[in-house]
Image 1 (tube, one colour):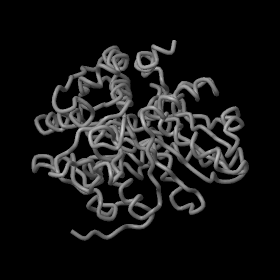
Image 2 (cartoon, rainbow, N blue to C red):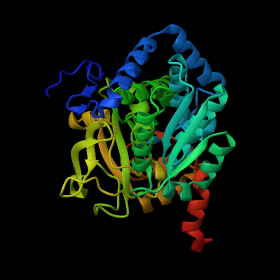
Image 3 (cartoon, helix red, strand yellow):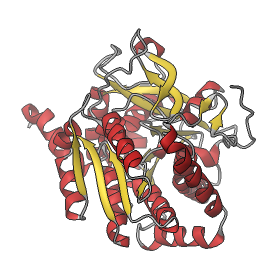
Image 4 (cartoon, helix red, strand yellow):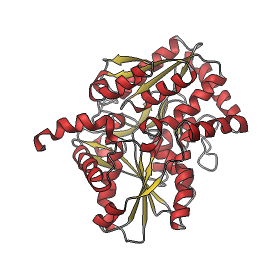
Length: 406
């Protein structure tokens, strides 16, 4: 089906950016998604709703998050000036709280009392459990058992906040499998339940809605860099799993042609299919297809079956990517690279020891790419990298991997 693009990087009425996006769901979810779309567009430009959202971001989450000049890293690398957008300092420790607050307000507007969510690294699960506790709503979070093993701290945090965490043993026992179970739950309980999806993926209107709630990151970064440097940055860098932290940073800069952008995927162990999560890497199995309600780039085998993925970071361990990212890649507006497990692990340590900031393993992929490219840039150029989360959740995992060195 041909789709007509709406200006200013908005999807069309069917939820497509170019050929990517849409709504590929069972008939039982068609009507609930239409209701969700109507409800979201009713509040999208509603001053009262937006004021309540922004007030919660300020008073409950602690926004604005700082834009920090990484002086020692910049001087050590000897190239561009590096700024960190400190989403790790937001309440619950990552950018996920932005979207969770926006969607919980929408769920309450829709009269929903039961909230379900999926989570990979656990940060979205924690954010969802947090906002459910704030408003006294029932919360069920689906999480792959492999992710539960490597993110045990976040599992306990969700339970402390009153959420029920349901382990998923299917498939690779990671994020894709958790989303499958959440969708099954929603189909069964659609009248009472709101599905608070955590990334800029899935069927329309989720990619748009999540992007809108996360765009506060880029709006703040834009204002902050103009205040600090008197001009826009030359380059934005962010890790890309489903794509919410990155599109949140990138979107407010998309019309600024002088600002380049790089999304960094999980390169895993190798380019062999099943050993990475780099969806835009054609050599590694990346192809266009449909997964979990949306058309985008995803990892498939030669028979078109969804491939297993791997990443050191649970939050990037996903077979597909948000449709707006696929569109922006197709028109050449954003470039996509990848960082391997080893590179991310090194970046995790470098930032910790150079700036006194322990980054999430997801964010470490973006840092890893900055370590490569900053020395090749001039001293008068500026990079903003999104530090999407803090690394407390990853410390035990990293300790195990580095135990022979300590």
